Image (cartoon, rainbow, N blue to C red; front, side, top):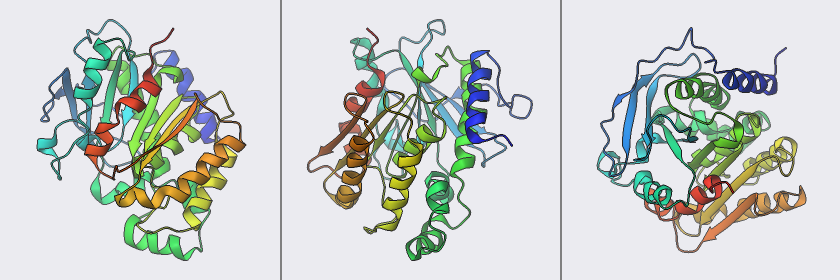
Length: 315
């Protein structure tokens, strides 16, 4: 039987050789101009990227002003792609404004050359795609999990399928079209809230593909109430599956108001586990931002810090 770890090795080997996994079954058309607008660089858009594993969705690729198609760039895969660039197009009038933060930092030499792949969520399946399946499998009879399934998931857990979509279909297509550095040391994940959960999960499930992740306002509690069960399942999973110290990098943070105020206990437990397992700065970093809440303006205001963590120029 081929395990997920075997799949990682196969994917990494294929990508290193310039092969596109699933090319025969996944053949998206070349990206066109994006409907979202950016102030720096440009966006290209697959309007409905097809997948064997999850429903099709838009995927947007941000190219910095210096991108010329010749110099290889690192790649940052970001979740909730419709919230990343243009606040005029989002449901709440807020966005991460990634281009405004990243472009001047690249120009100033503060960051490596990189592109952003913004993966749109499907709102009706966001929890199902982002909630780690291993957590759900560990809580089959939990009252908290039963309520979470009824109120949030509303379907089978799809996070393993979502990660396969990224690794086996999207990454090969991105590497085939753009000038990218394909190794794990140049391939990263970032997200907030539920997107933070799937970013940490992806780092652990596919350590041969992703070398680092950034998880902002990680939604360790699953729902909107503190609970013991879901954070405990996360801790048990991380104890088993985190790559060894020195073999991955992980940035985490949280605010102190709004939904972020409920993360204090769980994030402290994760931080303590990191220390226990030997994961220490500068390769693992956890920060608290006083007075910041759970929204795109807050994540945008501190985006420069996880970007520096992930993309510091090589010596």
